[in-house]
Length: 232
Ligand SMILES: NC(=O)c1ccc[n+]([C@@H]2O[C@H](COP(=O)([O-])OP(=O)(O)OC[C@H]3O[C@@H](n4cnc5c(N)ncnc54)[C@H](OP(=O)(O)O)[C@@H]3O)[C@@H](O)[C@H]2O)c1
Image (cartoon, rainbow, N blue to C red; front, side):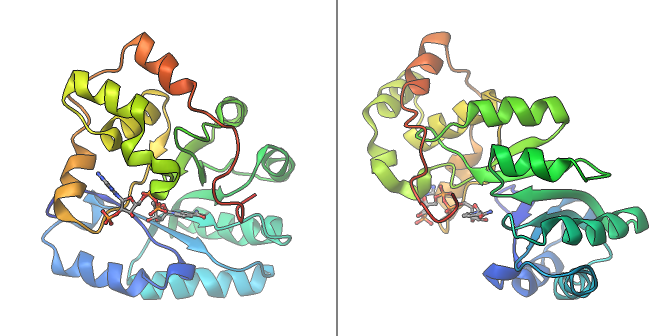
């Protein structure tokens, strides 16, 4: 928080909601200035989902969650979402979303939503750009949020020739170029680092703009496939 980050991405599955609550309490930053995301971890029915949301609110020690996601396209996702919509109407969740829903799953899911998901959090990075899914979601009003925006370092992300070469022009690192590319495409990013200096580096993105040539060179890095496997 002291570095300047205001969005914190937690999940029931990560067992980090309580730690996040402690961090918010320990900081001098006001509640309304932070944006807290969490995710429901397992597919379950309507009543259990209500209990599950309540347990996240308690673990986070919050009156409201800024963004609540269904972590994966569980078979019970539609029923879970109905419970989420109820909490949304009560003001205990400010925005609803999903995660790891591919095109078909997304289109099927929104058929029954009263509230269109604000966000679909997905594996997105320069090697897996998912532009067509982004366009489809944009039409319906859902923002693409990129998890593992550095591909978690896979495929030698941090020493990629194209990103290094472009970065040199702007005195930026491959990490900064990769994030900047996504931001310029209106993709929301949630990079992770355990190191303070890298956290600062990953925030320092707003003093340069990629040229048309840069954008088309980075576009060519797209392999159009997951580097993780489990999320597909
Ligand atoms: N919805 C989902 O299913 C899902 C799945 C996966 C992740 N996520 C979310 O997405 C977030 C980010 O994903 P991620 O952690 O998998 O991958 P990531 O943000 O793409 O990469 C994190 C890795 O990059 C390194 N790194 C960060 N900044 C760097 C820099 N400037 N230079 C060199 N190395 C750097 C980090 O190492 P150091 O820590 O040593 O800096 C860490 O090993 C997670 O924290 C989680 O909240 C969501």
